[in-house]
Image (cartoon, rainbow, N blue to C red; front, side, top):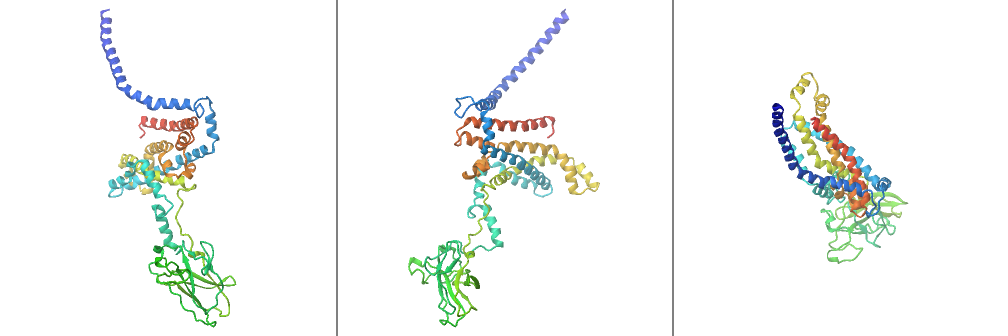
Length: 449
């Protein structure tokens, strides 16, 4: 009996100590639990409940918001765009991170290279969105990407010399803006030189090698075989001079293509010189001709790609996302690569495997757990992407670029004012994210990463 009492006496302090430790643990965990409940649990429960009511929150509608969600074309477009994001962005990022992690092991300045690629992670999505909104501008003078595209294009295809030029109305030429322009009447070879005035050209757009305009003298005889003239900017300094006449100080327009037509077909073609003058010879002196300035002289130059148009806006935003997250993917995969036993790689090389075979059959299989975690983490992240889409996509094409997160915001607060439907969208987004989170947590617990 005394033995039992003694055993109970020794057990009671142990039980009390365990209980004391539990209470202390709960005391320390309680603030975190309260914070988690206030910031996570309560909003989730409230959103689920709110999704069962109408836009004003006054009338219970059951699953009507969920039915409406899948009937709305704009919402379905957001779902499709989210699917594109989930498939494309994590796949590209994981592949790029793997390739860059392997390559950086073979360069001398690997640390500096990784630092440069990881720097965009220090930039907020808001700042990155503003950067790429400017970079994707259609105007090559503002958008750096289109400036590069136009530069490459113009290196292979010469742009039109005077895209903004138009004929002086009623003075020698007639036609619609953008050309072609033809002479008001017919001309005969050997006559006096013709003055063909153009306007609408900024002074800075006139080529630097242009000379003062001069009308070449014709032969003055019907026996001549050439038509001569000058194409010039009909704007005199100080707004002086006479319209349609070559005045002192007016500039010739070099490089303008001039054609002479007979029966609607080009009989001769030439290009104006530095002073804008031209000569079309070898013509029949007894025939009548029409002069034409082809539309190719006035074609609007190539302005690049419409990155933020309805077709390319989603790929363009994904490109901005890749710029931000490639460094993250590379660093995580690089850490896994550093943990691979080097003797395995050396054994493969001794057995005669090439670097490509080692990469495909040794490196990638050993990195499979890391690649899976990186991929799933990025899937979770792209499901919630909001900032880049909201900032980069212009208003007219916002609906074309919408994903679930932006659609939820627009429906709830961005003009839709339907928080019942917005809450249903948030619940759908939660249901899509939770399985990926559970998968990742289980892998971490198993020590797969």
